[in-house]
Length: 315
Image (tube, rainbow, N blue to C red; front, side, top):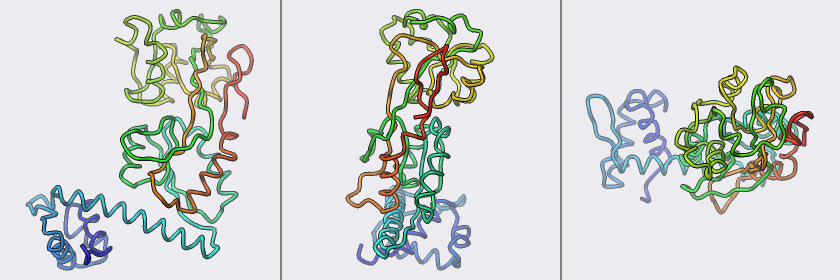
């Protein structure tokens, strides 16, 4: 593979995205024959067909998928090299593609603003998605670092804790349990729950909490795909929910939601910064991780005590 070039890899990625020679050529600023030549040369270099030429377009083969994955990894490393060279030259610049699970959107903007005040030369792009989407983008080199509740096990990553992540039970202000103290697990298990999708960190924590209640996990509750929808459902009286305390600060302050005093809660998990394992850490990412370690926790609204006192205080 000595004759492989970055231009050939960019060509593979463009065809992979568009599925058409002419569309890839337009993106790359090349002619159709030039793009075809790049692919032909790379196929000769590998000794394998990278795309099947069909009427509907260019369909990647198994080898095509492997080369495309390598192209993304190499492109990411080249960008990190550019950042490292800039750091050596004394230039405080670089780019970070940050992924945040959906629960983190309630604090991520303030955290990012705080970081950019200290490192104004760094360009930061934010992606927000559910856990599965965030892990997929980290795996595919589409983000550099992710903020999430549990590091993934399916890919080799480097992770560091930067703050507590409390999970609490909530109910509407007029709920019968809103005024009670020391609610037992057995009592809260009798309620109708509004829950996140399967696989979400919050739902897994709820399942663990209720796992010793016989039969309770068979029909956990009504599934909804976002924290905002869950909060509105609880306010409307459709049930109670187990949710990240970071998502409900405003609703608790304005009195539309109550944090329930359930025994053994809040359940305290942790927030992690997660990046792909690599022997070299790009300077921009290193700076962001140092900021998280030093100051990240202060941007997290943390539960101090349940109802009736104010349920939130800023760390």
